[in-house]
Structures are given as structure tokens and as C-alpha cells.
Image (cartoon, rainbow, N blue to C red; front, side, top):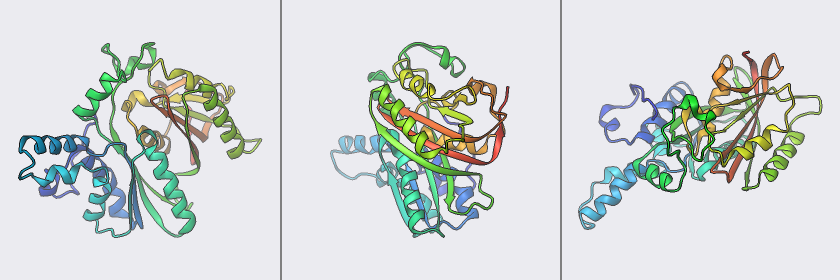
Length: 318
């Protein structure tokens, strides 16, 4: 479970009514929203506040559709995160939530890119948020998403069984067309639905050919490998496209598996100073990391690719 921080920017009377997903999303957004004027808020989430949704549905049954408390309903909708951020910061601009399961954050990112092409002088708050709820966990457990044996995150990639570990988290970004003081440039994003690893390989190969000049090499491939033996074939197919120059790393032992985990991957490449050894699967020869491909899949069906260029490369640890 994500370790929550103190939320000094949220009034206590509002904070006590918030579900965890809303708290995490607003907590991550506050530093950006307080220090910058944003023209819109774009959030990707698969479920929003599912725990509050289930509480509200239980109230309907328990009270026989009588007098219901509105708090759980207000906090339960997927767009509650974006709405609360807008209300707290009196932002009346573009406000939208993308709910596309494992591609929710990628679609939010595509939306931001299209808005910036139409409004080149604007800037937007972009984020991905999802929580673990008892309801989600139980349904996913019955669907075979999680490992039956007890396993630590440190041993996640040594396991050859089906399933992974549950995760949750929130990551927020300020996106615009201004390169001054920028941490990174998001060059492209692409999504794909398939269960065939060769389709993934060919799609990623075409993505690389379109996005990278012939002389440019990928310094880092960051994958969403999660210890689920059923999904490893897709990552193995992706890794086969990169030579010894490219370092291959993984991140889901840090945050667990959840639909918008790719937002955490983007945050990591933007703010890590160097690659820690526990993330590295295969050490490449690149001395520094500037050109990055993020390759993630959710449930072996929804695949997303991102091409990132860091303004200042991070160190490639040995």
C-alpha cells in the first residue's frame, strides 16, 4: 500500500471526507497547482475512488434506497480527483478524466499533447492515480491477477509463477511547450491492444523507427515487468529489439501493479538522479541516460509505449 504523507494543503474538514485515491491525487497535485497557473486538469484513472463507490452501493441496499449520505457518492466517481483539484484551486479551465483501465494515463497524455498543439502557450496539470480497494483486490484475486504465495517485492522478479503484487499510487506533472527549465521532453506515446507478443514486437519496432533518427540509440528501456510469468513473453519480445548499448530496467517492484503504473514510470525517469542497481535487469554500455523508452502492459492486453528525452541525463549505475 502507498504510504500517505501529511496533507497540509487540504483543509481538515474536507480531508476527512476524502477517499484514498482523491487524497493521493490532490496531495501529489498541490505543489504543482500552488506554484503554477494551469489552464486545465487532465487525470487518468481506471477506477477512481472504488472503495467509496462500494460503500455507497452498500448504503443503497442497507437503507432500502432511502435517505443516503452523499459523501461516499461524491467521492466515488472517477472524475472526483480532477474535480476536487479544480475546486480547491478555483480552476475553471479544462477538466477531464480518462478512464481506460491500463491505458488511462497514456490517453490522458495524448489528450494533453493534442491540447498543447491547439493551445501552444497553455500548460496543463497531468496525472495518473489509482488505489487498492478491498473490492478491486478481491475481484482481481479471483481473476488470478495476484500471486498465491507470499512474496516480497525484492524477490518479485525471481518468481516464475502466475500473478503479481497489488499496487497503488499517484503521480502528477506540469506539461507545456516550454523547454526552459524542463525536466524532460515527451516525444511520443502509442497504445496497442493485443495478446500476441509478436504484435507487440512489431509495433514497438515501428514506433522506434518512426521516433528515433537512424544514428540515435535508446539509452534505457524501462519496462513494466511485474513477475507474472504469463506476461513475460511480451517484455522479452520488446527487449529483443535493443542491443548492448541499452540498459534494461524495471520498476514495478517499487509500486506494485495497478492500471496507471506507467505514470510512476514517467515520474521515475524524470526525477531519478541515477539508476539504482535493484532496478537494472541488464546493464548497457551507455555512460549516461538521455533517450528513454517506457514499455508497459496491463493484464497482457493493453500496451503503451512512451519516448522520453531527458534534458539532463541521469547516471547509469554499474
